Image 1 (cartoon, rainbow, N blue to C red):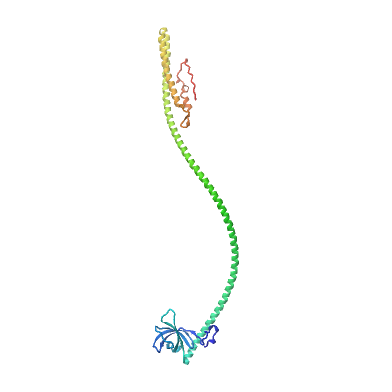
Image 2 (spheres, rainbow, N blue to C red):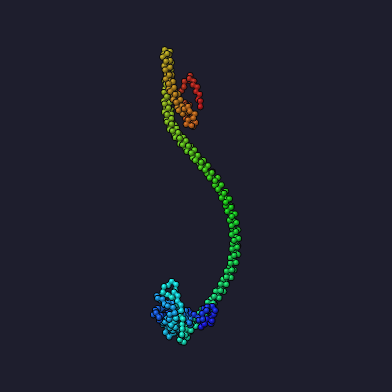
Length: 357
């Protein structure tokens, strides 16, 4: 089959015969050099074939090869062929691509070869049609996809435009919010500085108040200690007062006995008459003197107790004004004593006492 009988897309350039793909193994033999080996047919035509050979030795150009494809009665591979060209494969040291030309083929073998090539051409045409249909389909799909992409690009462009407008409005709002936040931050910073200043002042005031509280606590503790000491002194004074009252009661008893003795002495003196006048007068003077001694002692004791319950000569003591218990102070007078306990004073004696506060 000639290439002019094929569609233009399948024509092999300037070649006269159609080449079809082949993948048949064969054995080869070079008559001149005696080299043998194996190879594989890559494509085939009515005038020649392309064979991939494996050989460690080089063989001269224009050599005549003998082939054995082991296809038996269905063999369509010529038995001999002349080497036209050869080329070493890339990245290989012993593999070659060789072009062979056929000459003087038998009629039967030529018929079988043409049938094989026609079958390959039909397969090639069928594959070409399939590829063309697929190409057309892919072209239509590609065109549709391009149209869809153009439409989608327009839609996306519109969406992007609207999105850009929204982003621009959002950016404007964000800028306004940023400026507002900056103003708010400045106000907050200023308020924070004011609060910090007030906090420092409050801390200093708290420290001063704490120091004053410590001083007041110390003064209070001292006052409590002084109060406790005063209570102890008061209890001691009350005990001494009880002793003084007991002594005063005894003194009054002695005074009453002395007065009774004085009355009896006076009666005896009157009965004795004038002879005992001088002796009676001396005795009366002695009795009066004895009567005055208890009173003098009682008055001295009263003055001592009053001095103890009074301010003891202090208006201010320990930084505090001196307080006088008037009730206890007045209890030391003879007027506060129960009836019968107060000594009978001499009616001829006048005592003028003025109390100064």
